[in-house]
Length: 536
Image 1 (tube, rainbow, N blue to C red):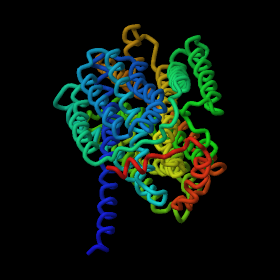
Image 2: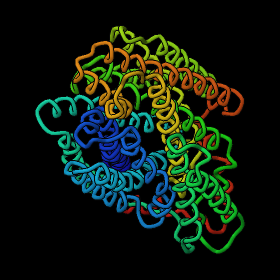
Image 3: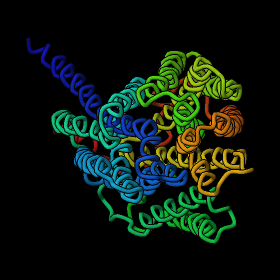
Image 4: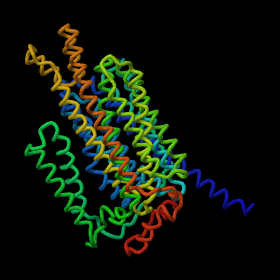
């Protein structure tokens, strides 16, 4: 009997680890729900709040802007003061932000609420991803990463469907209330199952590094968002881009050497090829995917004329494709390696976007269903290869900080995808609209966005004007598909030339050996993660 006790104890510990990961996955489910709920609700919000195309972009970009600015300091603070503690804090902030979104009465108020949601998500995302590094050995991380990815994917299709049902019966603000019960459940699950853990706390925080990283990302991202709308030579845009890059350059310089502070970013991580190029791969995949996610719901509502629930249901093929691509990539990773599978994923994604260029005003939904599924499968596989390579290379004591750096690059890609592709879409849409004989008031309404434009054209009773508005949007959609295909081909070239093969990422020596050796050489690299977890 005495010999069975260690085995029983190990089995209980192993079970508790997976329950803890499941609790963490619920936090990502909340974020996945919010992402696609907004996409489906955008047309209703545009009409209800009289929002312009620029404001529609800001509903998404304000969230991503704050997310990108706070990810690095959130990861650092979580590593230092407790990952469980900060996860609970992030859930609380996210819940308050969701309630505020539901009762927003103006476009400006909704943008402010989305900023608060972004702050909560900035805390949750790196800490959720860090749980993979803290709780599991390198050979187990592929399965754990897949579990977290699936939790996000469940939220992606569930969000549109729930939004569609709610928008058919209630006002648009109800879509944000679906976050609240999930947040409440996540709070209980995290409190019950996730063990507290911390990283090294031997040195003081680096306030200069935190300030430079946050301000630099905020300014640069603002410039990227405003550039397409104001023009790239606009003084405000130039100030954001140049000032942001200057601040980030100062940040990188501040992280070099030993100034007696805990670095915000451990540059040893960046010198590891698997981490560096894996993070870049995930960023390129995010750019392509989120650009598509922004335009597809507008096409479904404005051109195909489906309602909110129909939009949600018709968004499912892209997410199903993501799940299929992730699953196939996970199974085939050891046999074919990250390089081959990453290239294949991006090439498949490019083919899907090329199929998307064949969409016309009179096309059936089947065309859209096919190309969105293909895009999801290809880009989803490439995204998994990148994240698996990057997270597999992380040492435990830098789990949240390293995860935050990966997510920063992903969010920069997402913002760029929404801002640049959204601006391209809107520019071509407006340029393609009919202008001869159109009153200024009607022209302004037509130019806001496709949903408002179709509504205004329908109000005039002119079927030809409705068709012209839809054709203008499809012209812009086709252009964004070609650009997205080019982005995927660039991603394939990046993976082929730079990403390590990764066929042996399951090996602790290959996955984390170089970084662990560098960490062991550092006199400040005391890792308290295992000890903290063991006490719980």
